[in-house]
Length: 320
Length: 249
Image (cartoon, rainbow over all chains, first blue to last red; front, side):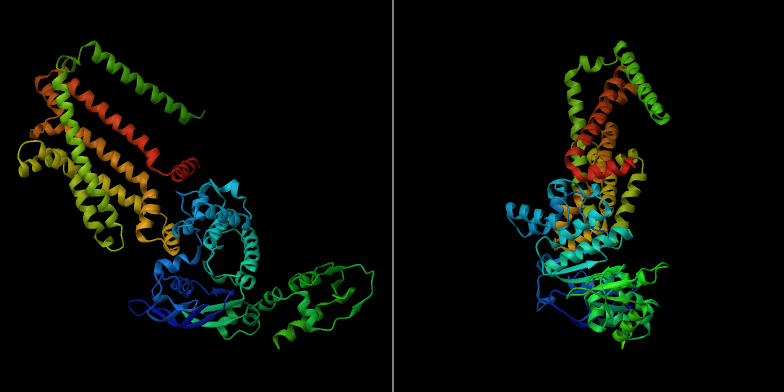
């Protein structure tokens, strides 16, 4: 879907912003470009829609090299969301969202229908916001509109440059969840820039970790956490990488890996479901006044009581 | 009501009292005699005045706005300082000196007056066009480019609407200044209402002075107000509302 082949960018004066990067991103994959500031993640993203030139190598989107495509046409076919939302203050919300469809010459009915679909998708009633202007919305709402605008012409590929970076933590977490939900239905191929490891772990199918324009590791989040490729990666994921990795696993993963004791019925305790994060389970176990923890079993009944030792055994298993 | 609003009211009332007193004084002393007795001459002078203002400011508008747009394009950005500094320099020369210089090129008459006033009107328009275009949120331009707008579309759909209020303010300033300065055109034989103003000064005759000066002032105020109304039509509603909201906080 998106293929980077030996991509480099050298600024006049010899500074290498991007150094020989090759990546292959599959259809419907959510890839987060992660790294400290100045690592080249934004540059790499902006190369895809040719807002940045590349000096060497090649990028192909859906099988065709970006050099062969018309810059303007290809950009209209790629969703683009940026941190400071970049909404146009002179246009209403409807006009903002429908910028690309308008350029593509969609009919009035088709635009209206699409606008309503998108607004419902992002959970903002279309009739309430149609005639509003961007400055009348909150930061979180503006960013939702930014996402809707990028989705307007239903592009197969989305480029997102720290889209939730300027939001406060509570709103950010909520919008991340909403966006994951949207992604589960729409299955876009997404390149997403972030400097926040927690955001990357939460959202990504795979993470590209960059440093000084060089690729450090391109892997699934749990691999990045459990098997860092080098010193920099382990430093970047942090001392609490095991804790972070627990948020990637759910109760069902643990049940699949370990044989857990059968629990008799009618016990007093906390019961976790298949999809619950192991991070919550651990937090529960470490509570000053813990209640016994049980897992729901597929075939009925409960497994447990679960102890910290079980979590320990699971982590050993996963990192082995 | 806070003290600021009270002071604003007092100033407003005092201002109107002065205006009314002034008109009462001029009318009761029959100082508009020239207009009433020579309406044809008045119409001629007013027409000439408007002609000079109209031609010189239209030419300035047609030069400075495109120049401001060009000088904010990436290709020409590096030349911006040359033009802005030159225009700044032009503005520091007294208007009478510019008129005299223009007379040196084109001789006595209306052409010299138009040239001088044209040069004099360039800077406010150029400056505000550049300032307006520069103040456009870079994120909006980046988003527009990333979504596949052509540079022309970005200019007309994003940049100009967002810069409109600053640009119109510049044009308004230029034309209002121009109306006042055109009174000096008399000095190089350009005609206009300056003829009566300077006659009044030379003859120490208030009927000439007031018959010339008051129409010039009224003209300037009218044009100023006209542009404020025009702003309502030319600046997009979203921008106006956003500016109002920003001013309120």
